[in-house]
Image 1 (spheres, one colour):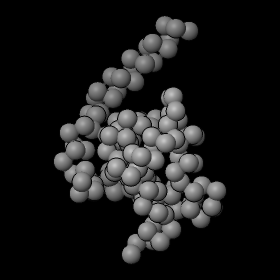
Image 2 (cartoon, rainbow, N blue to C red):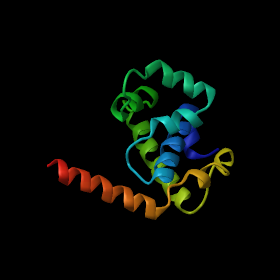
Image 3 (cartoon, one colour):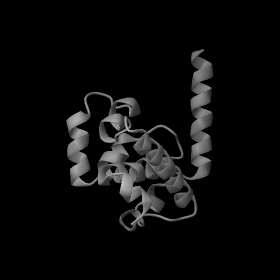
Image 4 (spheres, one colour):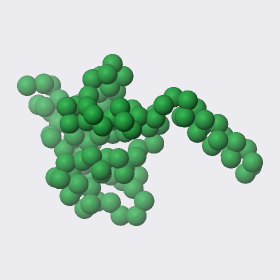
Length: 126
């Protein structure tokens, strides 16, 4: 039994994986809740439907799914996400996502082009 399985519940473990997989695929720190919902288990989808109202945000959803009020859970969740990020960068994936992640990961060049486009838009609006 791994350390995270002793502290984090299955929903918290799955959510950590999905959040990091979304960041890995889209190379952005903005949570893609559509990705999370699309690849979530049926149980997590029910939980997400129950709390999503309007435009979701991390501050609204994550505290409702992760027991952040318990300091040891909050610390373990953050550490587990950091570990997952490192594992993903080394090429380790969950078996269920092994064929999916490479197909949707944004190439670096496209991400750089997108950043330039956003920066250009901001400068023209200012």
